[in-house]
Length: 82
Image (cartoon, rainbow, N blue to C red; front, top):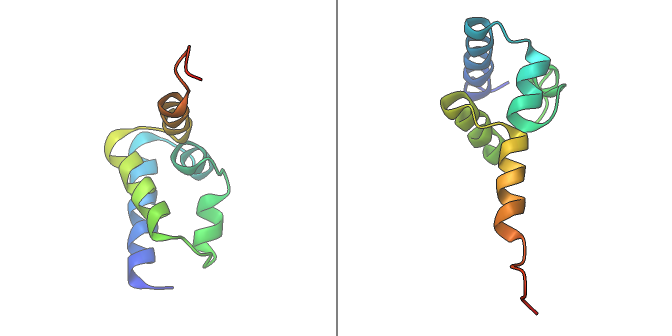
C-alpha cells in the first residue's frame, strides 16, 4: 500500500474517532459505500477522484446523497423546454 493511501486511511480513522462515527457510516456518507474503508484497508483501489470526494466530505460534511441530489437538480430540464 502506498504512503498516500496509508495517510488517507489514517485521516479517515481520526475523522471517525473524533466524531464517534463508524467506518461503515463514513463510507456511506462520503462515497455511498458502507464497505469502502474495509476495501481500501485491504489494499483495494481508490481512484484520485474518490480521494478528492472523501477529502471534500471530511472538510465540508457534504454527503454522497447531497452531492447526487445537487447534481440531479442541476441537470433537470426546465419546465416548458422542448
